[in-house]
Image 1 (cartoon, protein in one colour):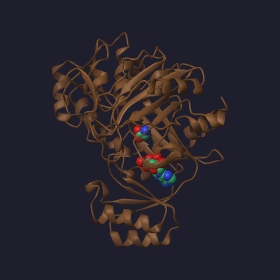
Image 2 (image 1 turned 120 degrees about the vertical axis):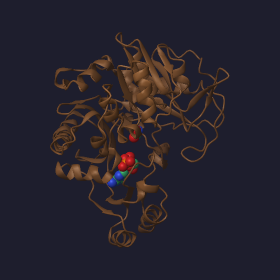
Image 3 (image 1 turned 180 degrees about the vertical axis):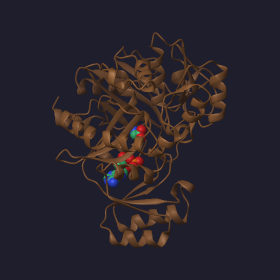
Image 4 (image 1 turned 120 degrees about the horizontal axis):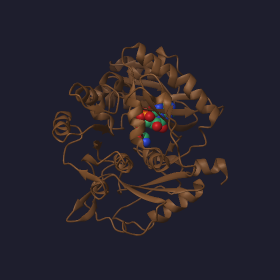
Length: 428
Ligand code: AMP
Ligand code: GLY
């Protein structure tokens, strides 16, 4: 069958690569894809905007696509699944009603409240004065969030009340996030260790995927500005079996039930961004309605089961009948980014060293790359996610960084401590 993957990042390269390995898939189309997907056997890029749902639908029908796998949240929040399903196509993800879990932070909080699931305390505001007054009454640090989608930039961790006031003004008064920031949430600051809990949900059953952890800050030691993610690994020791059991019973099951009771049953990938307190109590920071990027890259390296089987089981409501198999090894991905990211950066830089032999334990997933006159050039902030398997996490890390050292482009940088937190815990 033909499968259409939507998106152009490292996550989509990993999904396309994994789907192309399925004996049941004849071709994977990626809209619009990147230089990595362009060169992947069994994969073809199609020059379509991943935000243009109408064109994507038209294309999927014309190409006899049998399954659509959207990578990013934007098309999902804009109703891609509803539109594709109405046209008789199978599309892997939540409906617009359920995707509000990521599309509106207030909606997510309301579902969490209905589910009595643990999360940071919050208040919501659309008017400036009450929001400023509230900030003046709260202890710092606190967190100011734009309600809607703001391309990952709508969260301000304010260390002082002054910073929180500035963030509230930016959103409610200066409209820096447009409509997404017309409503803000002022949230309590949670302490602990972050982890990504990614599961498949078929409306009723929940199948947790292997654990993973992301590094959101730009610089070593979790310093510097927030990014989309500078690296990730799986498994993540912080999500030990007892924490995982708590996440399932205190968060995932009640939330999936609350959505169903709300008339918005959830189908697709459900990603809970968690803060795990030192005593192992999980609390929800946010929901995403898709795979994490870069968490997806190490997950796909470790997944032995055919991803198509998992997608089919999700769409058929049969997730209680599948047990995915994971490689026992660890996987770790290091993001190579363009100088200046997550601020402004240059593009069009030649990427050298991609042909260096890396062996079958290393896979270079592309994100912000393009082909120009047959050469790979940079086209985004996160350029590559160099991912490796290893018998231990430290072996996976050494292999990733070994491959990173072979690759070069003007201004390239990466964090040098991906995996450090887990390694400190495991002593391996
Ligand atoms: P979000 O998009 O809501 O995940 O926020 C982005 C990042 O901000 C998260 O990955 C956390 O690192 C941080 N964050 C969000 N909410 C909180 C919170 N209530 N307390 C502490 N950190 C937070
Ligand atoms: N890696 C974080 C995210 O995908 O939202």
